Length: 305
Image 1 (cartoon, rainbow, N blue to C red):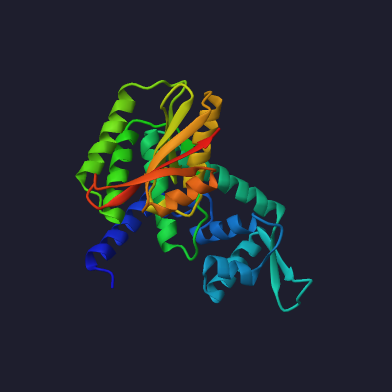
Image 2 (image 1 turned 120 degrees about the vertical axis):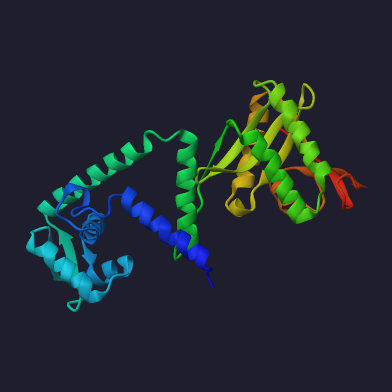
């Protein structure tokens, strides 16, 4: 059962957001429509015709209440209703030309208001904001949204995130101790201080505005590249982020003129090993060690480019 503290926090956020979004004003976005009426107009504008039953299910509205809303919009000449040609027991709704114009007004004003709200916000905070909104949808939504992600170069703060993400994942899932975090911090620190941008690269996978994965392509020798620090945050697993990061690393290595690429991993990282195998890597050799606490087998993998 939700705690009183959590309930109060959600209620507080609701009050905050209704003020920010202007939902308490008499007419939404300077029109004569209420929030519910505007939402009905918006949904109807997404298609030529909509069954009343489908609209009621999509908006989770009481049948009687929705009927009254439809009646008000119909009396203003914003929509028309008629019997369905496929099933005479059902009613379908269509926006009139006047209703379409009203939708365009609302849509344009809403876009301008949101743009004005976001313009003063720094880009990094915008990503946090959008990511937080997506989290609310994921947690409270009736179904899962398909995850989308982008790959980008590291931005300020990302190197610290790479170290933290590795430390948390490997500690929580494999019991690795602080020596592993120290190794990652040393690798990332040396990279940040000095690397060849023409033959070495790093990518961050960003999901809903937040970093969710990383990978490096580093120089081992003139002809051999090294794949390092592939790690995907738990919330982004199963979305293809890991495979996409490896594919990008291989593409870059080829374009940079390397003939072969190698990597070092551990035998208990089964998810990563499956990604490497699908990408064409083959196990060269392995050796047991306790460098990070638990006994594991360090493995060397490689493939030609």
